[in-house]
Every structure is written in C-alpha cells, then in structure tokens.
Length: 559
Image (cartoon, rainbow, N blue to C red):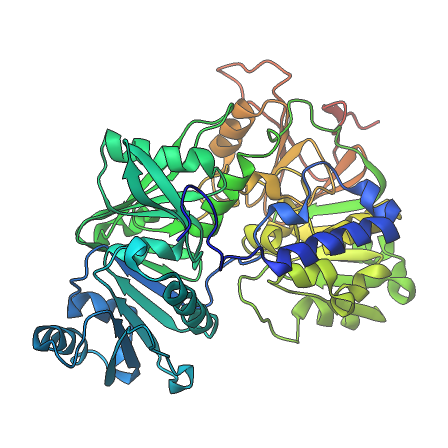
C-alpha cells in the first residue's frame, strides 16, 4: 500500500470526471452566448455527481456485532448473506460458532468464505448482503486483495444491496484514512471511497487529541468530511442519510477556512430526538457540499449583482395556491397558447417521476399546444444528454414546482441544463415557480436544509440557487409559517442581500428591477441599508397591486 498521502495504484482518476470536464468545455465553445451568462461559481465539476449511495453500508468499529443491531437493517429474514473473513472458518470452530450465532438467526441463508490469497468470489451468487470481518489492519492486507475487494463491494452497492464491514479495516471504505501514526503525525492513505469524500476514523473519542488528528487530515484534504466513530458503535449509511446504531456517538467535522470556523456535529442513536432530527441524523451530501463550498470564493459576495432581470420576466409565488389569472399571464409572457413552448420542472427527490404531470395537463387544458416536462437526479445527464436537454433549446417558459428546493440545486446547479434555463430569460422568455420553485430563482438559496426545513440558512446549499435574479434571498409560506424571524436572522448575517418573504397565494412579477405584487396576502421586503427601530417592523409589507423597485430598494408609490 502506498502511504504518505499518495493514491493507491488501483485508485485511478475517475473517467466520468474527465468526461464531464470535456463536455463543459465543449459547451462553452459551441454555445458562447450561454457560457457568458454563467457567473464565477456555477461550475459543474466542483460538485459531486454521486449524490447518494445506491445501496446501504453498515460500519462497525469492533468485530463484535449483535443480532439486535442487524435487525435494524429491515426484513433480513428474506435475505441471503455471504461473510468474508480472513480466518479459516472450516478449521476454527470458535469463528464458525460466532458467525453462526450472529447471523443465522437473522438471515435465511448464510455462507462463509475465507479470504485466502487465491480466493475468488462468485458475484453471480447474488447475495443480498455481504459482510466483511477482518482482524487485520489495512497495512496487513495484500494490495491485490484490497483491489479485488473494492471491485466486489462497489458492484454490490451499485446493485442497491447491503455491505457490512466490522473491525479495524472498516475505515478503508472512506476516501482517505489514517493508516498509522509516526512521530505523533498521521500517515494518510487513500481508500476505496465507497463512503464518498469522507475521512473515517474508528475508535474515536470526543477529546482534543482525536479532534486535532482529524483536523490535520482535513487540512490536507479540505474537501473531505471527517467522521469519528466511537468504540463499540456502528454507523449506517443509506442513500444520503447517516445515523448511528449502538450506544456511542459519531462526530462529523469540517476544517475551517479564512471565513468560517471548524464545523462539528455529534449524533447518537437517540429515540427521543425525533423532534430534533439533527441530533440523530446527518445528510452526507449537505456536508460534502459544505466541505466543497469552503474551498471556493466566499458566498454570497460582499457586493452581489444588482437584482435586475435584464430581459424576460420572473413570476415568483409563495406557495399554497396561485393568484387569480397568474398562470394565464405566465402563458402569455411565454408567447401565448399557440406559440408558447413550456417546460415544467418538478422538484422531487425520487429518481423517477410519473410521466403524467398535473402541470403539463393543466397547460394543455388551457389550450397550450407545446408543453412538456423534464426531471432527473443525474447531474451528468443534465450536463450532457442531448435528448434530455432538447425541450430547453426552444423553451419560452419554464415553471419550477414545489417541494424541497435543494433537490433542484442537486440536479441542475452548474450543469448545461442550468445554463440553458438562464438563457430562456436572456432571450426574453419567462420563468416561474411556486414554493421551492420561488426560492430556487434567486442566486442565494434560502431554506435548503435536507433534514427538516426549519433553518433558513443551510451550509452547503446557500450557493445553490439557479440565479435568475441576484442580490436577493427568497422565502415562501411566509406569514402562514411564522418565518419573519428567520428572514431577520438571514439579512442580519448577510445585509448585502435584499430579503423577500412571500405569503401563500401571493406573488411578485419581476420585469427589469420592478416587482409587482399580486394575490391575497403580502410580500415582505427586508432592507438592511435602512435603519431598524425596536418599535417598528424591520420590513416593508406590500399588498396586491403595489410595486417595489428591487434595485433602488424602495416602494413605488401608486399615482
């Protein structure tokens, strides 16, 4: 194994990253007008394309695993298991008895395999679960065997199946790990990256020496998430969510930069924390994005672009219903019933959605002749698939649906699809959206936490808005969900941004820098260039028919 921060020979640079970079460069060449519309941090290759694990990984710090812990995996009674061990099961009755006692009451079929030098795993066996027990450290495992194991494990996970790894070698599943300590300094090796963009450390303790060791690893790998797993504790990675099993804790860490302190969060297996899920649950993609974000230019910039829509129209709705006649205005702004070419973009976490979308059906019932939708969770597809991108080439109007706005950031931010969406407005078209489809229109993305949505500022997703308008932060369901204190908190932290809070069934239509209010509620504008008084609201609230100049930050008086 090659150490001292050198990649192992079997960890080659990813072909997909190279392809994505080439495609991005090609797009810039063949579509120079669109490329110029991009701002400095909308980069495809900065952000992960593997947004979630296709399968499940359960990692245990110790080789001792209880049947009770395994039951948390779900209906294992219908599953088959293959156990890899470096101990001769056939000749070691104690090992055989331990494996039998642990797994046979849980799985309907259990097979044990000794990892001898000439062992070959028959992947066609089709086991639902693979377990790897090994008393060796990563240094003691032959390189060729590690390479073969990674191939088997990766193929297994890609099929949506489960991998269990227990023992001191568990940390090799992460991107980098501490292989040894020499003169109190960690020697870092490159792992399998099955737990992507992480530095996993087992036998961790929440004390200064352990934290300092983790921070030293992150200092040389700032785009990695540090995960410290306590003794006698397991950690479950499923999709993009992470939780702890057992009595111990897991600590997540990010290194500091010039503008942000070290980020630390500890989670445990606490059934009483359901009302505070951040105490027992972590979204790994959010942490990976935050790690990346800390290596880029500060965001939002101290002097954001002036909020002006140079060409075209934005329609931004606060969710909970539509102002009367507003969808008709959207269609007219896109060219009218016969000429409009409309694209609906649902905001969904699922990889696949129904081919029958209600918004498209509604447009067609209005008489729109050209209406379609697109959806993907595959960033590479959104960046390069010509068939997928085809509806955006001639689109005159795009509508973004409601849901959780981080889904839209994951799918499209920095992709060629994103550039083409911005080009719709540049060519004089219209972009609209409600709820999540409202917030995503700003360059700064508000309320994008993947776990719950109670916080208006989400590390890792603030730099996730699609940026059809700059210099603002947009929140929705505003009065109905009591979100005024949240916006106060946001603009106090980022006074350079104009805060906009939209009530339900209320909208602003933006042309140039003028935002006109429509609907039954109010739109709240938070401007920190103006003084705040303790006995007055820290916002201006406008009703149906009133207008606000976003560039000048002032109410337009009706004449």
